[in-house]
Length: 294
Length: 301
Ligand SMILES: Nc1ncnc2c1ncn2[C@@H]1O[C@H](COP(=O)(O)OP(=O)(O)OP(=O)(O)O)[C@@H](O)[C@H]1O
Ligand SMILES: [Mg+2]
Image 1: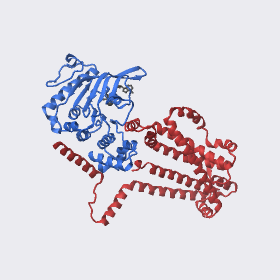
Image 2: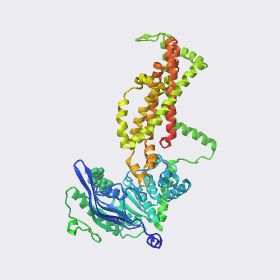
Image 3: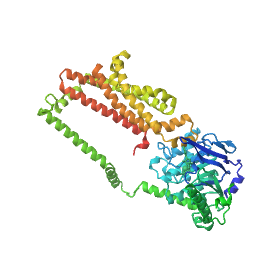
Image 4: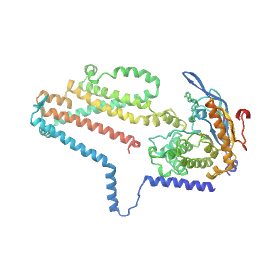
């Protein structure tokens, strides 16, 4: 449905992220540490793409480079053909830590980006109210963040990042600190917002269920130095429902992804693995041979 | 479509459940009379702790007066001598006399004016300097060494220098008050700047905030709690410095009044001067705390 809507939209499609030959090293006292190497990813306009991988594999590093907070050591990061040069309102970001301004009310937080753009007060108040309504937060517009639950804080964070109408939304394990029930609700709210805004999303998580449930495509990163190990399209139909997480299709995707990640985690710890359940999977191997993965 | 219906349903469930949590028993009670009673009961429940504190505080102050009274009426000598110390009632008598005395009021007003000018100057210079030093490394590198050398010098040690520097006595006293409060304000502002959460700066950056906006919208409000700590400490030191300066080089002012009372053997006035200083110090720090609550509504419960 959203696919058709996007096709009739007159605007040229926006939010095409391309990361080519990407590598990034951190300079430390012990020398330079390669966090990410030889990485290619892309997100098509309006696509929802997740990155999963073991802890420390460089997911945040990659995302921060797309946001413009880090410069790649080599390679390029472009959005709609324009190289990324520092942070901008074109690329909204939601952080793993709660990052609302404690001195602003919920509505003022959401208005912040519009204020920076010079939108008149009355207009941005209206825009913020509308957005808060979409996330079920209209009752809390006058609250200070301190009085919100973790789930509400992250909802405000997402709404704040969307308020300026960015081309892409970057999320770094935004639901990592939330309990299972809240996560599920947050995932549906995020899906809902994404479909309404027709925005490209790059989503970092270590929760495989979450990645499959939300995404059109999932990238699986290898252990340090991180690079893309596999790319898995998620052909599940939309709108997706909670009950789908029990379907055999979902479980097959999950089994495949889990074994990939388990192998990588073990590799990171210097272990070996033999059993894999990847039947019925369509995996793009990105230059790795099947023997290498199995 | 069914999923969006489910979603909406769930959103509502989330919202209503949290609203219910936030406001227990809204309009459960239709009669306004009982509602007022309930409100009072709720107010009492919320403020029980602070009411207890106020009650104990009042009792302890009363006991202090009683002990003071007993020590002076019986002229106790036990290591310290209470022979010449005025009794609370004597001090009260000289207080009732003093409040009708324009000279006493002038002493008070002059001290307040010196504090107001000296402290305000310190805040107006110290806070922006601290903010700028915290943001721009070069300014920090230039100013910090000088500040570190001057900071340990107590304001009172500046008295002779101040008299040489400034043409009038009044100006040198204000200068010393300024110096006393300047360094605590500067150091605390700087400390606040160093603790600003970098994630908030990043969040502002990817919402399109430029340098000046980040300074105004992130660094400044994030540092406000420490700025107000600096102002509170600075106000305390301002009074210390002012009273010392008035006693040494002053004409007029409540510090001078207290010292003069000693020279004129008006013992009750010594205690009166001390109490006046205490009350003024307390009042000014309460003013700053009130200002802090106004400036930082997100921090008050
Ligand atoms: N500032 C830094 N200086 C040096 N090394 C760093 C720095 N930041 C990250 N690293 C290293 O780079 C690697 C990748 O870090 P990154 O934070 O991107 O991992 P991640 O995949 O996001 O992990 P997690 O899932 O735990 O958040 C890690 O091994 C980390 O130790
Ligand atoms: Mg991370």
